[in-house]
Length: 101
Image (cartoon, rainbow, N blue to C red; front, side, top):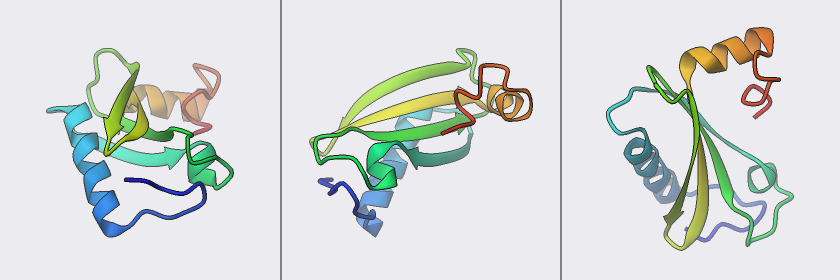
């Protein structure tokens, strides 16, 4: 995938990342996903991991990090249950940990 620190994703890279999101989510319905962190904000370095917030419905673990390698790039998926995400946005139940992403 080789992204520069402040580059945007090509259509092919978006497709590959979406496929990886679906693999991480498995059969759970994806409610939303977004890139966050240094690389997504344009101030990371090439060796920085790409971070993805993955919001899914009915996730029993509620919050988990899944590190993956995608085309020689480190990608860190922060998967969170939709209900927990919404509660964190509304009430900062976990200190806006996921809401700030």
